[in-house]
Image 1 (cartoon, rainbow, N blue to C red):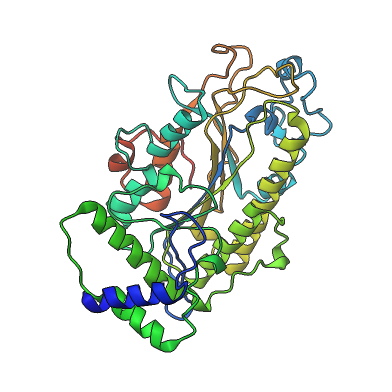
Image 2: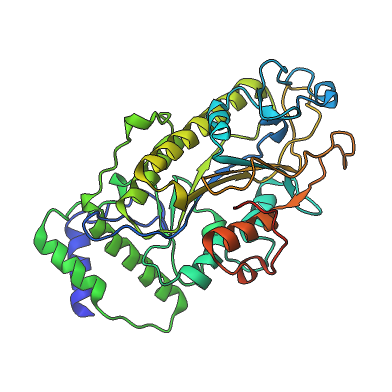
Length: 402
């Protein structure tokens, strides 16, 4: 114990040993190609669309004249819609989604929401993150602790903001990073220091203080995974035409980590900016283009690796927008909206019926599919995890997978 304390004290006093470049608890993580091996475990990648994505201008009900009566300046013309079927189609910025749909690597799940909807960003997102449970842990955090705790690094968050509540755990910390380079140990070129760090990690420690124990565990994750990062290159692969955006960079890095053989089962990243109360047209197009092209590039890279059959990407937002556009050429907070899944094992391209644009509740769409049933499908039929400790009960699934 004294040796460990002395080493850390001397190292931290003498130099910036750990480049954390972020607020605690953003901890270092990674892997080395040299010490991991390929596996066949199923992987879930989550892309959160923060701000409340306008589902009606994402999956456009162009076959319904009511849409055009309510979206008098924001409506996507029928000739511009990337048609999925005779009733719905994609926003023209979603050429990436359109190509993936044509390749049968995508599913739209329509009208997803929950009873008694909350139109607050924070409260609605908290419900999605906790699956309506009173526990302070997130639904993915509970998945980690109930079913994936034996994995060395079961989940990773990529992003510069706070770690999503969905990943919060009580006992097994999930690391957050901004980029691989920002979370390497600067001193690991020195073999002597590497050996000393390895000894620090292995040294036993006991405490009856739960908070101190969590901090110890977090520090161990930081040090141990830092040692594995040294052979991993944080470089975007231009072959797959990722957008030069934070989402593009994050998904490119996730694809590389999957290829490296890392045992991580859950990856999480976020695209911000969907709170489009005014002048929605161009900003929404830009966001959707980034989303569609980033996801398409990611799926192409995963397929080129030979990992397409073991990866599903799931994208959601905390709520949709109101049916009628507002006076500022934008849309206000709404309720139900589509969610999206990508992979090779999806059962059907469109799941569920598009909500009625006439049978509304306080000007909003009525949800058709409870988001927790989507979680149950992902947990049960993809991750092979018992959903009951995570979601509270086993909701009837919408049948997403073959």
